[in-house]
Image 1 (cartoon, helix red, strand yellow):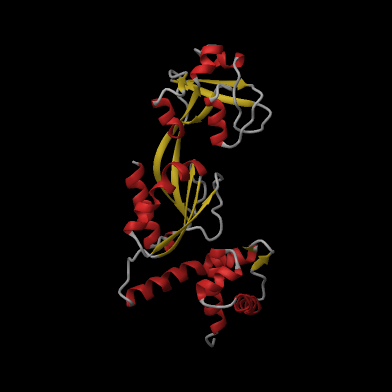
Image 2 (cartoon, helix red, strand yellow):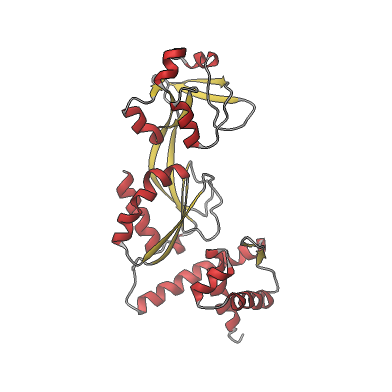
Length: 295
């Protein structure tokens, strides 16, 4: 079969579109106009006989066929980039744009405050951060994602960064007014702050082999963790939160940890990326940096 330049050229342009989710930004990456990017993608779609992208005024996303195609060819792009770096003597160089998706709590506590130090180490790198507390699937074009919980997809390569625990907390002002629960079942007579809008706000406690579920109640449902903690600090009620997010408030006495004989579940934080083929130097460097900073 004769070589078809539309495939190689179109795949490179397609990768830029997926990364930027925008024809204009993709054009800036590959040195083409917006119309040139659109035409290159259209030629690739004509060559393959399928529609690869859904285009809206807001963003560009892969179709199911487009996702299947790119999953097959993206490892080849990594191999070609590695080969080019090898020839230029730049193998292992940390450079380019690193696109990160992270839970907002981790972004605020660890990632954003450390960007200056990381960029000082790797001045040829650019960083783009998307905050999203959902887990899988990894958003298109993301190099590495940080989220709480266990990966469920075999297509993901995961590194455990740290572990934290769910803790039950309240402000001293609340405890002065309402008293402190001594056992989990005491919570039914307290005001609790719900982190999600579900019919039964069930909090689960365990000790040895004993598991105690408790249906809590209260007038507040706050899905944003910062708002939930702020309300708890004001004395609005008892909350369940990740210990890592309130450790400084516990140390300062602004919040009090409750039911310490009944430890909450341990929750891992993972850094994940789609395949080993795309474990580029920038991804490796950033995950190693995070392990260094967070442990």
